[in-house]
Image (cartoon, rainbow, N blue to C red):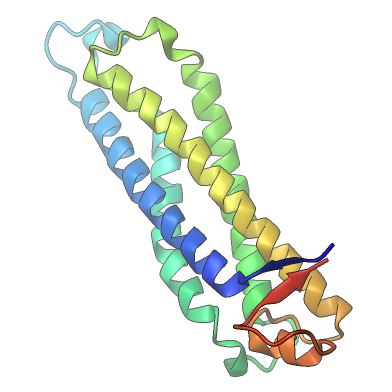
Length: 190
């Protein structure tokens, strides 16, 4: 059975979803940092002393890296003709950057879940509890999208290497493969 998917459109859509999730997570991290560094009088959290969660700062850094990385990769998706070095191809750069982001995001999401744990004890009537719950959810959702993008990048690398083509996932890979039914820029994954 051959699975056919339009890889460039799927990747672009996934990057847009990741950008939206990153923006939401950025806002949630900013809200959490604002709350913990400006605790209102009488707040029982941390004995009323201002503080910040280091894992929230780490997730904030991940979102900022994603903001810079996503537009760069969207320009790389169809830029394979600009790269002549065999290691500096768009898909290699994308896979390396996605691997780093994926690891950072996984560590951040795991530490967030470990630090805040099961938030059923936190009353959803309080805004801080809703922010923490949403922060955990979007950290994991963003990691799932990142993992899917990383899997797509490695499938593209595998496909290109099996075809004997340079490590590129754009139209160049399709032209080097055996003839398949004509259609709009489809890459078949076996």
